[in-house]
Image 1 (tube, helix red, strand yellow):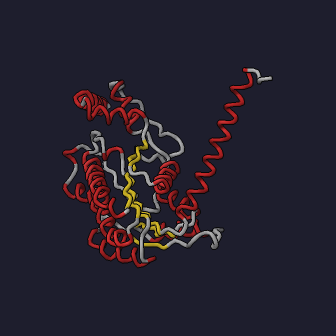
Image 2 (spheres, one colour):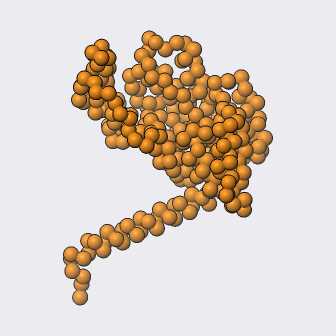
Image 3 (cartoon, rainbow, N blue to C red):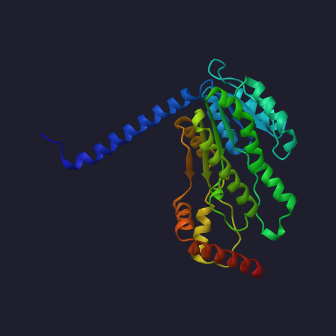
Length: 313
């Protein structure tokens, strides 16, 4: 005798949920085993995303090299990772001072990173410098600083570890970039330019090193939302509704823990390109390619409304 139809659907849902749970648990277990004993370098490890990455890879048994601009925060992260950690399952991280705004120090930094374990299996370029301002108010020095941190720093570090990866015919380089490396938004000219440059560099690098068994991955995400609650904004004149909706979607943030999990999965599954964005930015990317005049008009309307709002305050 068959089951009543009223029972079949709930039963299928329960079974599907159970299968999904088991699948996720298997992936979680595999993610730990796949990075075990791997030498993983994380830049800007003291940031929200860097810290979450450090925790995930440390629990997975990776040999971490954590980079940051100051000892205090690096040592604090070191203590949080090693306290109550099982030395039979994890390795104490190595700490390296790395400041992309000081490009003259890069040669010594690369040598120090290589000296830690003699090789690098995974390089996660996570550093980023943001700048929001009208084009005419940005100085040449600011342009250079943001290019150093967002482009010249990651590309120089990647070049530094590349020879040993080529000689070992293995390695994985991950660029944690931004959706603005693909889609420029007003008042982010220098930031978007640096992210576009980084995206282009690592896209070229991917093709050049594939024959050596080296994986290059880029992860494009919206802005990092580390706040617990959305900020309270003062009331302003209502802007163009279409422009407001698109701008809000383009800047809808992603949690550091979510991005860190995506980075771990990218390393484990060797994915070459990841878009961690909501549907509207995806649509905007297609509009940029297929119907750019419409996107340009919407973005320009948003700029006009924002200027008008400032004048009325």
